[in-house]
Image (cartoon, rainbow, N blue to C red; front, top):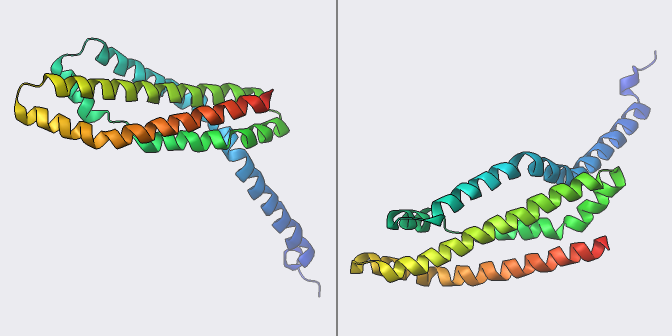
Length: 180
């Protein structure tokens, strides 16, 4: 009596190899394809949010300034995530080139990383400028003290964000050096 084909070793070994190949391909292609997806579908939303944020900050009332300072504090994690993407950019570009979609990856990468950097940088600059301005104009000593304390607590954050921005610029330059 013969065993069914799915109980034979010669059936399982190719199946395991195919599963491993698919897992490796998925791992390699995830980051470049996600960057392309994010650049096509999510970046326009981020850009629109930033334009709305800029409109709100062009001629703000004091209440709008307080809302901006309270709601839009920059996050160090956003800059760190951007640097992680930049560190993987050369490898992702090589993978995209291997599979033939380097042009779309490059376009989406430039849109997503550089554009996201400018959005984060703009929000950070506006936040710290408004924080300085508000801490100088508040009339009640309680509010003024609150914003002075907030300013003192965000000095370290401002320094760390500056260091992350320098790292981003360094990685961005390395990516362009690789392209040459």
